Image (cartoon, rainbow over all chains, first blue to last red; front, side, top):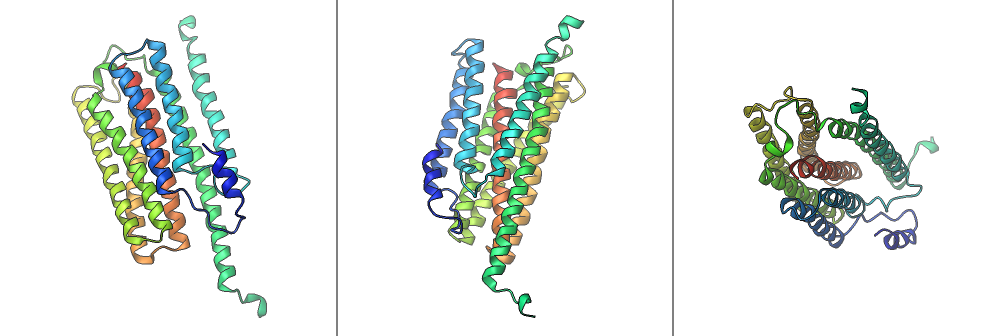
Length: 114
Length: 201
């Protein structure tokens, strides 16, 4: 998704105004988002898969849609370097994953204690 | 005296630098907001099974309601992007049109959410019924408050646009609003997935 526009944007130098996306990229992002929303809906509402399979489909499509929003709508692959916003975002994701996964893991011992 | 005279180009460049610094600051806000939602998600995931003999998500969530909410917010994320495109094309009226569309879609989303909450409370599922519902109302409600703030922010920006037109300052404000709105859609994707879809499966 990102590398081609990255190398493209880099050739222009710093002072040119950054053109954040085009109608085409927004429309493509919108269509992919709709598809990624409909897939887990179909799987869940029709009971197409086992429990684990359904959970996996829901999580994978959600994460893919997060990436679509970040690249097609929020343009994190554009802007001046160094991209402190991306660094902050990655740190944020690490903390969120730690909090969520850590909470689920530690609380799973609740039944052992009781 | 000579050093006090600043050419308009230098001044403009200086403003642009300040504005891009403000956008960087806004990114940091978005990251800190991600942490807020992360902790609320963690709380929800831990407490989702603790229904205290009360209703679970499977009995409470109405499929047509949250499916409609999802598409409303997704479309409004797209229209806020269209507003930014109009801004880059320096078309003020088109920009205000797409901002108003974003606003209306956001308001429709909010209407559905408030109706859902009112219905839940009437069914006897309020924030004090169980740990699951406390976590649910806090998580979904916090997102709803964010959307409400975004709607008022957008109204304010439309007034500023009509008054000042497209300037370096209003451009930055619209870009930040658009980032915020996309961010709220991202949060909703996870609410939709983790709370609603996993709730009804």
